[in-house]
Length: 185
Image 1 (spheres, rainbow, N blue to C red):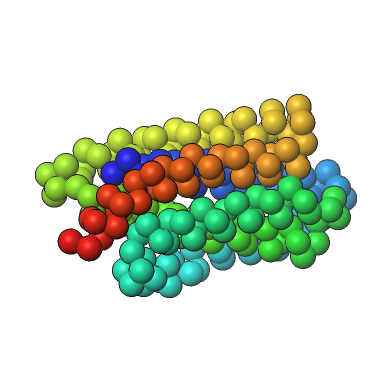
Image 2: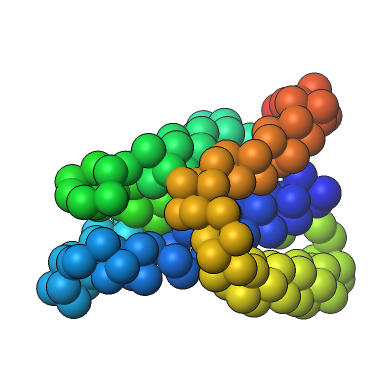
């Protein structure tokens, strides 16, 4: 349950942190709303369109592996966003697509792990706590992203996103044996 909660919160925070500032980053560098719309469409496609695939691969390979894949995808997305030239272009579009899909993988697999790790009587209460943590930290992430970009840069925001992936990866590795045992039973 702890791995699932940390994954759900971290994936939401990283995704919101970078996604929130991307439209402003693009506009600040001379892009029009059509470009912003295209980049965010790629992001939204990554977030939702591939969910049936994410669910199937989670069922087939298990939540821990798909969480790891999602966290790696988020880290790559954050790195690409940080390293994208000011002109944006295809690299930033790819970064935002991967940001959406990394979130999707982490969210689908994390949700599956959360509900699978709880007794039926506990699910409603724990899911309520999880939702409060996820959406509360997403609000803080959204509000702080502008402060971070104003005080540092969009590049720094991307590197911060990479740093925020470290905690769930470390927890996943620390709990690996427990998770493998739970998957086997």
